[in-house]
Structure formats: C-alpha cells, structure tokens
Amino acid sequence: GRRGLEGACRRGAMEAAELRVGFVGAGRMAGGLARGLLRAGKVPASSILASAPTDKNLDAWRESGCRTTHCNLEVLQESTLVFLATKPHILPGVLQEIRPAVGPHHIVVSLVAGITLQTLQRLLPAGTKVLRLMPNLPCVVQAGAMVFARGSGAGDGEAALLKNLLSSCGLCEEVPESYINIHTGLSGSGVAYVYLFAEALAEGAVKMGMPSGLASRIAAQTLLGAAKVMLETGEHPAKLRGDVCTPGGTTIHALHQLEKGALRATVMNAVEAATKRACDMAED
Image (cartoon, rainbow, N blue to C red; front, side, top):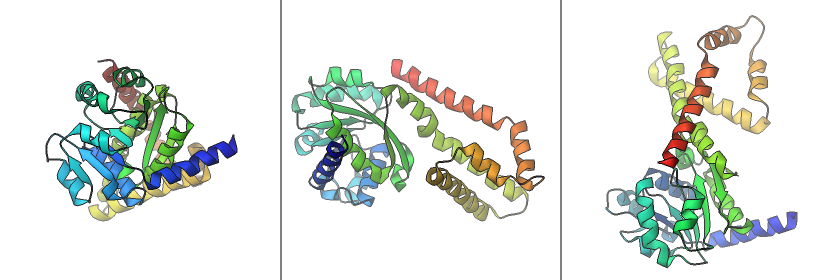
C-alpha cells in the first residue's frame, strides 16, 4: 500500500508540473486558492485560466499573470484540473453548460458551499472524476485549512494530486463528506470568530494603556504562536493551557474571568449554529 501511495504522490508531483488549472468563477475564494498555488510555485501563472461573466473580478487575475476568459467552456477545453467556484444558485446552470465538454481526463473540484457530491455527479457525465473541497480564506497566505471528499469516480491518484497541490495552501485533509458542513462551522466561519477574539484581546490592552496598532500586532502574533505550538506538538489544548498557568499567577486569574463569561460554551454554540446554517443552506 505504502509504495503504491508513494507512486501516486510522485505521479501527483509529475502531473503538477504540466498541470493546467482552470477556475470557473473568479471570486474571493477562487482567487485565494490561485494565489496560494502561485505563491508556492506549484503552478505557473501561464497555466491558470479563470472565467467570469464580467471583468470585475478578472482584472486581479490578469495582474498576477493568469489568463482569463468570459467563456466557461474554454476553461474546460484548456484545463485538466477544473475548480468550480460559482455562487451556489448559479452552479446548476453552469454544470448544464459545461457538461458536454467534460471528459474522462478532467478532474472537477467543486468549492461551492452546500452542493453535494450526489448533486454534482447527477449533473455531470457518469463517471466524472469529481471531488468536493471546502477551503477557508487564509489559503491566500498559505495558512488555509481545507477538507475534501471524493466522489465515486475519483480514485487515490486524484486525491493524492489534489492533496499534493493544496498542501502548498495550508492544512489539507481528506474527510467523509458529512464533515464538510462541520468544517464550514469550525474553520470557514471560524476565521471570523478568531478575528473577534483578537480584536477583544487588543482592546483589553488598549484599555490598559497600550497603543492600538501595537496591541493588534501582538494579539495576532500571540494567536499565531499558540496555533503553531498546538500543531507542532500535537498536544491537547487543555494540556498546553495548563502549562501556562502557574499557581496563583496572572493566567489563572484571567482564565477565571473567561470561564465566568462562558467563553467555551459560547464558542461551541457558535460552531453549532454555523454548521446548522450550512446544513440548512444545503437543503434549500
């Protein structure tokens, strides 16, 4: 199994060299992913083609050297790996339009929230290699958190290729499709919860007399450092938190206030609310 996987990864690396990547839809999420790939040097800008109905979003793509078009079919004709990044309500029409151009050599990856693999497979030709990916905005700075699930037509090779390519944009994990809405609540929306927390941290320091810009920078670096330790040690956050608390010290006094404000229960409720909303949107 191991050798087969390494072979698949090597093939993934080779294919990435001459990979032609297309984006149908050129909004913020597609742009973030493309920028991550470019910054990591995974795909040259000349191998990326993006389509959108107007030039509004395409100007930025052209500035980074990518090719652009107003024709979705052209993206299919020119690319092997195609990211679908339209708004959910537009996707069925787009799939109908590109369906005749989709062939067995294509790998189709949907970034569209709330559209299931089952729906994608129904609207694309039988046997199409289709995967569903849920990224988050920090992909732009190569610190994203992404999960993907594969459809029945996609095999180990396609999964390895996608993982190899996207590892340049951050953490990338294959999951059962049922986790995708949870990932949306935890990570897709979760970035905003962290900004709210960072803002509150910095404002606490401003209240105590530190200038705002400095407080914001230190808050951001504090979050970055804490996250890095968590990823690199693999320790449970409760253990790491305990390590910071000395008996009778500053940290435990602060944590007592956070517990009084029910920080943990509130954040758990937030993840639940966003996940449920993602599920509701999928059913609409």
